[in-house]
Length: 185
Image 1 (tube, helix red, strand yellow):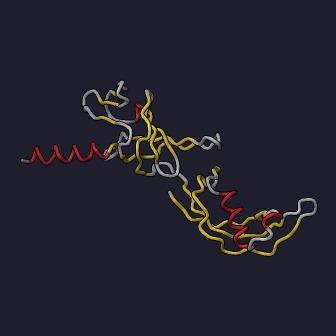
Image 2 (cartoon, one colour):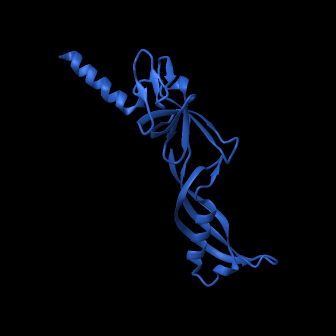
Image 3 (tube, one colour):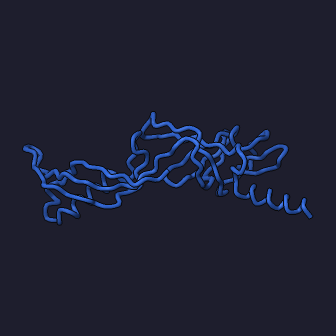
């Protein structure tokens, strides 16, 4: 889920930025510090939305930089269990598919791709034995988040499933609707 959060922190502005307007120097350092930042509490920081307030700066002896008490807002993506997401398959492997869900890449294990025996073929696709459904790179899909782990902050893991009604490749949904309309004729 995407959120806008309000944060208050002391932002360090190094001496080489003292010639720049304080607002610009603080914003530059906020962007450097927070964009693409990942942690367990915030999830994935997408970007700095705005600086709300900059307090007085203080200089800490021995450092030379100014520290400004700053309130700002961030746009974050915090994946939540059972959340639905749209994405694009970025890679197919022998053990499943990687899906770009916008703020992060997540994985669908081969056992979670469809209710069928699924095999990986040399063309780099996953194919259902009975259903003949095919999942390939660049397929647009709808998925559900089933696991979230920030155990390794530099490599957070999100697990997905497509094994529920109306999930999976959007092509599957189109083909299913075609079959239903043909069977009514």
